[in-house]
Image 1 (tube, rainbow, N blue to C red):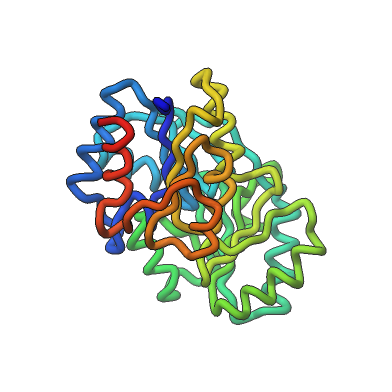
Image 2 (tube, rainbow, N blue to C red):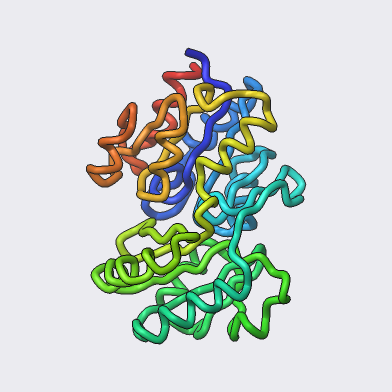
Length: 266
C-alpha cells in the first residue's frame, strides 16, 4: 500500500537519544516530502519547539504540540485545539501540589510554559532539549480568564506519579491523566490526543486513517499507532507499546524510522 501521510513522534522516535536529528533522518524526511507526502510531527513539546525540528528537517508542514492538544498550520496559525479551562487546570494543579508537594507541576498554554521554580534541574534539562522559554509564577495571575490550558505536566518519582494517576483519574473523568514517560504524568482534556490531531489533519488533506503511517515509542503514542493504517513502534519502545504496533522498527539510535520510510517510499 502507498501511504499518503507520515505522522511521527519526536523524542525517542525521530531524534536519537541525544535529541539530535541524524543525516539519514533529515534526508529521508525531505525525500518523503518531495513525493508530495505530508510529514507531520506530533509531540508532547510545545508547538514552537516542534516547529524548530521542522526547520532543522528543512520542511514546511503543520505541527502538532502538547500530545495532540494544539495544531498549528505551516504559518503558525492555530488550526485546532482541545484544552482545559483555566479554572479547571488551576484546581487540578493545586490539588496535586497539596497532596504530593514534592512533584513539579508545569502549566502549558500555547506559547506559555508556566513553572513554580525555573531553577529546578529537571526543568532546566527539559528546556535544554526544547529551547522553550519558561515563565516563573502563578498560572492564576499569568493566564487570562479565557485562556486554554493545553497541558498540566507533573514530573517526579515514577511511583509517586502512579499514585497521582490512581488518585486523580477517577476524580476528573473529563481529563486524560496518563504517563508519557516513567517520570512524566500529563493531564489534558479527554478529547486531546495524537490520534484526534491526526484525524483533523486527515480531513484537511482529504485522506483516511488507513492512509497514515505513524511512528512512536511511548505511551502517549499508543492511540496514534492504533489509529494509523500502519503503526510502527520503535525498537526502543516499552514492550507493551510494541505489542499494539503493526510493525517494529530499529531503535531511534540506529535510524529505525528512516529505514522503514525508505522501505515504504523508496
